[in-house]
Length: 284
Ligand code: GUN
Image 1 (cartoon, rainbow, N blue to C red):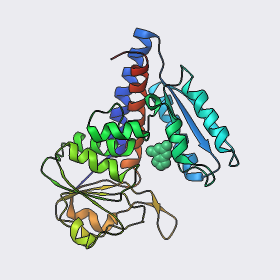
Image 2: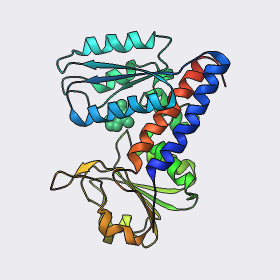
Image 3: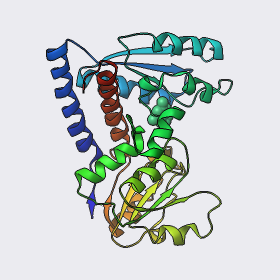
Image 4: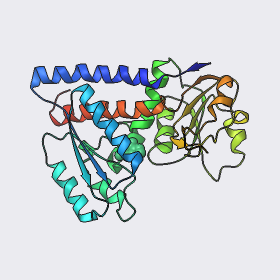
């Protein structure tokens, strides 16, 4: 059993983005810029946003934070997105989700210029991913693929099971595995015999948001298990969707929480932002 080190893989990705950023600065005098918008006081979102800003510093990007109060109106938020769409020094716009309940996240995402949509949440970018002709890949699923690549884990012909069908993770995750010729099953709350389906997986991706949901009986011997969960256990301690201690010995590879998929999401965001900068400046 090998533990996949997301921190190490993410450091590799960020280092290559840092070098590319230096090149952009030296050759063109351009610095990639990311605007991060956070609305309200969700403590988890605050941690994610701080980590994203820290990563920008590490790779040499300009980053701007727009922290808006909980009571921000839909019109105010849309107005900010519009302003950011028009700012030449902002190449990527990220509106941290979830938004407070009174705000319509769909309308906000659709207001972002698709060329600045470094989350790849806009319908235009989602459509491009379906067609396999994308500029940006969604951060978490692309981060998972990067981990598989760096550990030389091939997808072709494998039984890949994704638990969860969210627009942010489950659905695009299935699509990226399919692009690499995996045989993909997406499971959800209505799936019959979920444990049986999972126990046939060569590659099992858990993105359900339920602490320690994946137990040893759901995992095939020698499987690769990827844990996208960021949950709290009964003692309030950070844990994943996989019962790591009981599952790990059955796996060929497994990602831990923390230190697995989480850092990879941010590394992909850095990749997408520099790509957005190059596209907007006609640099290939
Ligand atoms: N909330 C949880 N994950 C994400 C993400 O990848 N992007 C944004 N914008 N919000 C999130």
